[in-house]
Length: 173
Image (cartoon, rainbow, N blue to C red; front, side):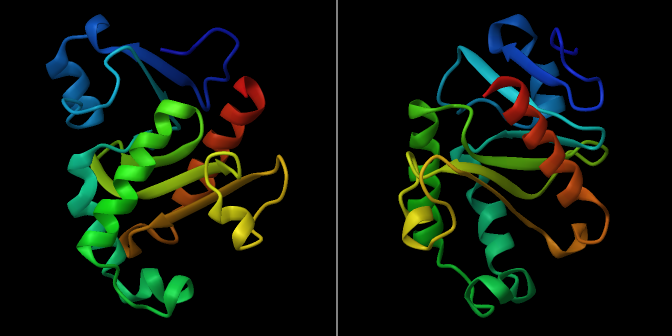
């Protein structure tokens, strides 16, 4: 479904868990059983990607992503991130949705395979102080970024996911 006034290229789907059968939602968006809020869940969506909030069950996917030396090459020299550090970071990112559900980190799921391919972020210094610390943004600027599995590189997913988030930013935020 396309929200009123939204482009069909990058529709934003807002669904209540109670509005759709759990099996239908789980098939399309992955396991939703431990999302923080059962009220409204916002999913920016593009032609090939579903972007959703992180849940605790995403930890193994994050660990795999952050263990790939090529993925981490320009982030920290190719070093893997410890499971403990990923778990701590994931908990903070999930808690941040309570402050602002429209900003933060979004899991990227490829629609055809229903597989985790990485993540995107749409952040301000208000919720994520380290952005200013590393001079990534200042004041009210918003940082857009992503990290994708190597198998998903060179397929246009970075551009497609970024456009979906930018569309959401300009139309709703």
